[in-house]
Image (cartoon, rainbow, N blue to C red; front, side):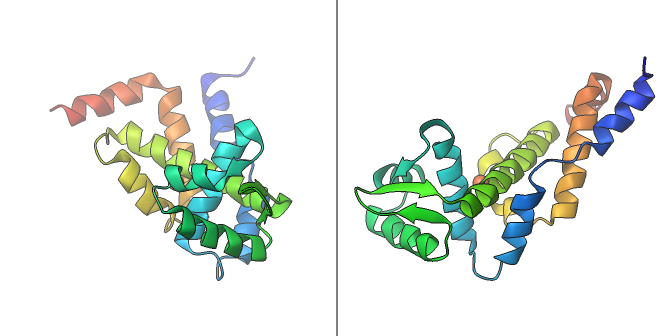
Length: 165
Ligand code: FE2
């Protein structure tokens, strides 16, 4: 049976699993804009349940005109990130899916960390801003720290006391 300290070390070593997605994003970082990242993340998020997403749905989710969404999706299709043919239906290619998975995880790690800090009102806005600039190294550190604090509720309680002083 492992001691608490050893179990804690395991948490620290548990990096997230989308290394491939990150490598692909790095390879494409000169051509993928922040807006394209937002599209890929949203298409991935939505495709998890349906396997595909429609242009109209994406434009509603990202709060953009259908014509802008169509243009962006066509660019992503030229870059080999999505398959987009008829009927306004979009599905991710293998590369697009790997990158989308990393982008969604990146979003979730930052959001969880900010939530842990007690950020509420600007949670989504700040997550959206931070995700495009954070390095993968810092992201891993945020992930480890969040998991560590969540594992030891006493740390969270101490921090919350500071917040409400
Ligand atoms: Fe995001």
